[in-house]
Image (cartoon, rainbow, N blue to C red):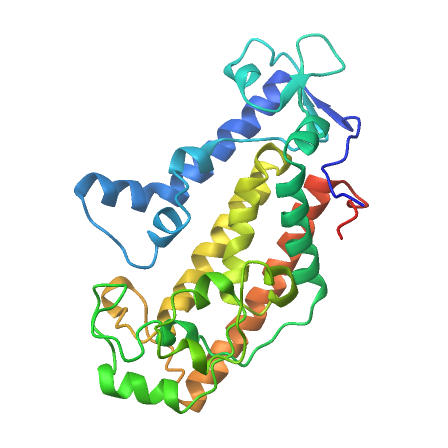
Length: 300
C-alpha cells in the first residue's frame, strides 16, 4: 500500500490569542537558537560546528522561525492573516479558521512522504550500532592533502591515516559515506547507496540523528513547531560530538576533543552516542505520529 499523510479532523481548536502566543513563543525560541549564526553571517564569519546546520542542510533561520501547529489543530480567526496564503493550509470547520490540509499534501507529495516515513520508521525499529566511533570524519580526510574543513588535523596527516588503518570502518549513512576519500571507501564494511538508505539507517548513527531535523523540515506543516525546534537542538548537539570526535582540532570553537583513538575516548563517544540514539528515536516517533496520524500510514 502507499504511505501518504492521512486525513483526520482537527482535535483542538485554538482561539486567536492562544495560537498567536504559541507562534510568538516559537519565534523567540527559534531566534535564540539561530542568533549566533545570524550574527556571524552579518560579520562574514563561519563556525565549523554550529553553522553546519545552515550550510549542509541549507535551511535558513527564517524557515526555522515559521511556526506550524500540526495537522490536528485548527486556528481560529486566521483566514485574514498571511498564513492563509501558505501552502497546504485550508479553511477549517469554523468561520475564518485555518487548518493544515494533510490530505492535500498527502496526495501531492505522496512519493516524498512515503520515502520519509519508510526511513523514519525503519530506523526507529532497528537496533542501534555503536561501534563506528565517528570514524566517518576520519575517512573523509584519509590520505588526502586537502580537507573539507579549513581546520588543522589534531594528530597530523600521518597519524590520522594510522588511526583509520588500525580500525574497521562501519559507516551506514550514505550522506557521510559519499564524502569518503577514494582510498577510504573500499575499507568500509558497507556500501551505502540512496536506494539502500532505509535498509541501512540505524539510530546509533549520528548523521541519521541529525537528519531527523531534515525530515521535520521537509514535512513542513505536518510537524508541530516544538518538534521542529527539538529536532534542530538535537542536530546541533549531535554536531558537536561529531566534530569533537573528528580528526580536526575543534578547541578554538568550543569543541574539546573526544579522543576516539584511545579506549577512554571510545567509551565517552559510545556513551554519548547511545543517549543521542534515545533522543533521536523519541523524536522520530513524534514526527511519525504528527505527520502520519496516531496509527501511522502503511510503508512498504
